[in-house]
Picture 1 (cartoon, rainbow, N blue to C red):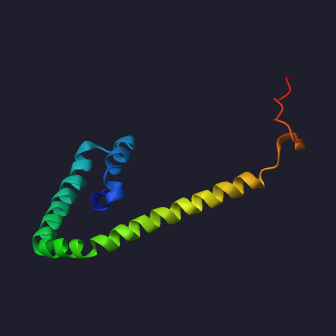
Picture 2 (cartoon, rainbow, N blue to C red):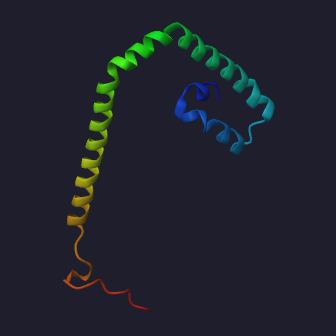
Length: 107
C-alpha cells in the first residue's frame, strides 16, 4: 500500500485492488495518508532543490530526448512489423488449398 503511492504505475491501481480485496477503509487510510504526505513532501522538496537545474538539463537534452523517443518508437514499430510478417508467413493456408477457407461443417 505504502509503496504503491511511490510507484507511478501502481499509484492508480492500488486503491482499486485494495477495494476489490475488501481492505477496511481505516486500514487503507492508515497506509495511504502517510504515503501521500511523504510522497508529496519528497516531490515538492526535490522540485525546490533541483528545479532550476532540471529546467537547464531539459533545455540541454531536449533535442537528444526527442531523437531518443523517436528512435525508440521507430524500433518498436519495426519489431511489430517483422513479427506480424513472420506470423502471416508461418500460418498454413486453411484446408491446404489455394481458395478461400471453407466454413466448418454442421454436425
